[in-house]
Image 1: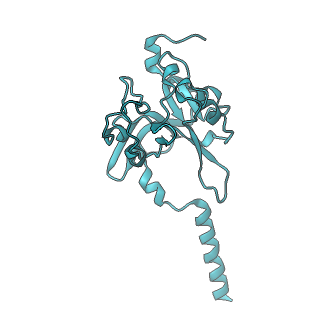
Image 2: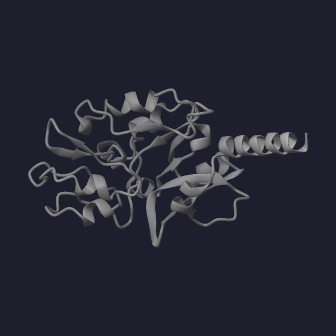
Image 3: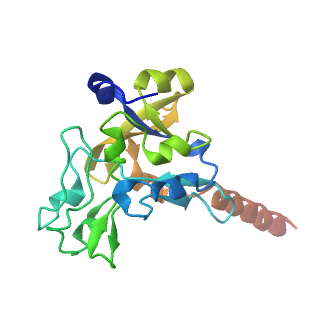
Length: 220
């Protein structure tokens, strides 16, 4: 299939479904082949609860509506395109101060010490600007990373729905990239800071088992 028409390109969105990630690393390897990344991968896989599970989740740039990385850049090196893609820092301007690395709430920007340049996912802009899929979404076998229209994702995932609002303390961030959540989930945004404080299910089960043992020993 050839490049899409400009009107179709505007309808394309990026969707992440962490529950479908199988940790195959295909996206990580494919990212290195993007022409704008110079052989480096701008995507990573993080473990959800490594103590009890090998479940992974892909981490890419969320392309914020008001990108914190760009707001804290003293050299004005990080630009956001008209269609909402936050790009890698521009080499002539980047002073490798690491402000963007420290400020990003999603932990996405990475500083290349070899090039003294902040580099990150730019949604394969050389491809997506002409209607092609990003490299990572084009190879993901489980479609944990999906690039298409909202109508397509609604048809493919009838039990899920996309959200693109995230709460970090008092700061609400809207993003160009969507996160898929269960359709019955009532939230309109994900409170990231609150979720950090939630006790992992594995730890909760361990604590409950300890309490049962203590109660049994006291009763004996």
